[in-house]
Image 1: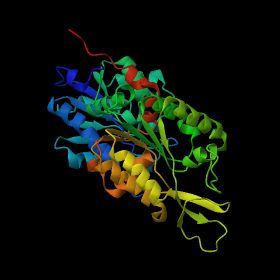
Image 2: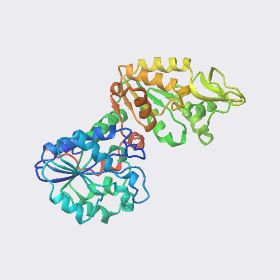
Image 3: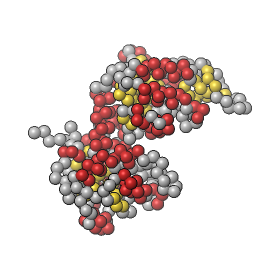
Length: 394
């Protein structure tokens, strides 16, 4: 088992570098639109403050091209000041003498947030000299940024190779829940997969085929599977390069006795119509485009979810950002929230849907990872977790 922040001892006065994931949506005026990733990082930060460490926070925001003021982390510091009783400071640099001086004069139990690490090209390049310069600022490294644990960057991967290290509480919680999915899920285990392209989730789907009892496939990717089943989908989006894979998967599922559920009715529009009015149909003709699952499908999927003991959901069931096509995603989200199963929701769009509907409190784990969640389930590990030291067994 990996060392956690609680395995670290004698932290008073030590400089602890903490890699967080503060990659939150911010508007042009610097207003944070969703602070949930910040809130989820607080247990680790507060614990280190209680241990009277000097807490130095590292994070990225978006994918800047050099220094971009709109992608500065200063709005994050304002939120931290509101949420944490300890002193919180910010500096618009990551390395250099000014940073060293500010850390030198920090009081125990205080916090310093450094600037967006991706303002430096060396971060994404995983430049070891850059990482060594950051490592020289501190005594211990704690990685609590699960959302980028699949990225071998300087502050996610290289720092762990250079310093005594551990994972934070958020990282520990994510890994524990997803490890159970991969190794020992409660059964019946139902997986709901949505989104658009099948090709981006092939390894993810194959892995879940081994461990899940039922795969519910919705969203635009369902139409690739329907085509593979010989069902007409009109002009609905199809990932043509993945039709053969979908056909093979359906055959494998049949051989293994796995249950795959696909939409049986659809909310769609007629491309030929002057007024693009949404309606429900069981069969899609040539000029129809489906954008959501219909009421019969909602019932089919919901009945399956109500019998589950564990649920994993990744990807919306339709074009949920359009109110006309949100019902399917909304009803499946409500079913997952209502079920007695242990529920995990991962992937940006799925998480956004849950928040939009207001069901965050009814889901057991809302994963902060998108690509990281997929990669962990595919491989059972992540590079930035692999480099963390193991617990000492006495």
